[in-house]
Structure formats: C-alpha cells, structure tokens
Length: 68
Image (cartoon, rainbow, N blue to C red; front, side):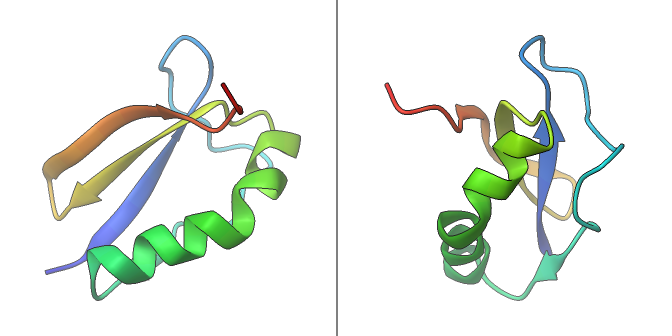
C-alpha cells in the first residue's frame, strides 16, 4: 500500500506547478504527519486543499489547508 497527497487549488483542480515532488508514504500516519509539517509551504505554492489517496482509493478529499 502506498499513501500520497493530491494537491488541489480552490476549485479542486490538481496543482502540479511549484509544489514539492509527489511523495509516497508507507502509512496513513506518516502521510498525515508530513502534511502537518509542510502545509504552510503548500499554501505558499497555491495549494488550497489536499486529498489523501491509498493507491487509487480516496481516504478523504478536499481538506482545506486554511485555518477555519
């Protein structure tokens, strides 16, 4: 199993320009921990939301990086 983040703009379109390379993680916890350490850099690269994928299965989608 491989876990990875899909980076999205405010409209849900995938952001690939100016973001970190797609990292794969061996567990959901590792992926979530990484996001907790890097969300500010993602926002600076115009990423507004993220979707967590396990292989091709969506674990959760459209999670905002903005503080509510």
